[in-house]
Length: 250
Image (tube, rainbow, N blue to C red):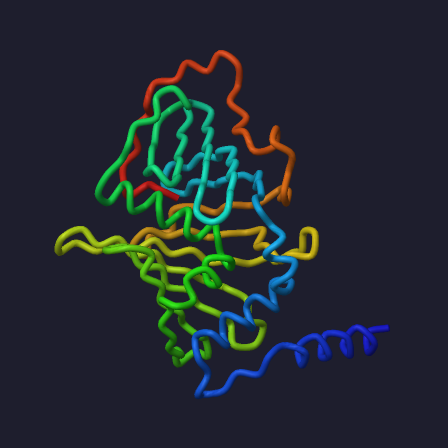
């Protein structure tokens, strides 16, 4: 039985496109799309909802996390601590943050950059396909293919692709504000398929190399009904913007 399973794994590995030293960014993106379920399955995903738990190491508290992602770059996030709530939103009209849907305020500068890049990360690997014309490829000494994607002026997403599995195992989001540069790092693991599409069910997040949080995913729903695309705001939530320090963003 073990030999049969090993044979299946080897066959799956060999089925992935081969990459060489002369590989292009487009070839890497094609191999990532194949590893995550194939182009047909991926492009059938219009939206997904993630429910999980954030272990905030800096705050030493746990929080309920809900992310609602609508392709290509729309994102709603709810982070609910015992003492309060934060909501983030990215859409075509801009980026917002607040303590309830009624207290969302537009954000600019580095705060806006952080929200836009969180939306970009949540849209991996689809973002690679949508921005393949902008992607620049290099290969690290540790065997990762590194794709640099300028999301917009001053916002850079760096994606690390494992050379063996073609999975995205790490991302770095870079916000440039004048001479200052802030880096958000995310490590991805515990990959599982949902409706034929691969998702990471665990994330380790860092801000400028400080370990800020661990997100453990409990459930992912692909193309949920409209009701599933709404944040679960509890009745009677008092609202009121709860301001968080920039360095504490998970």
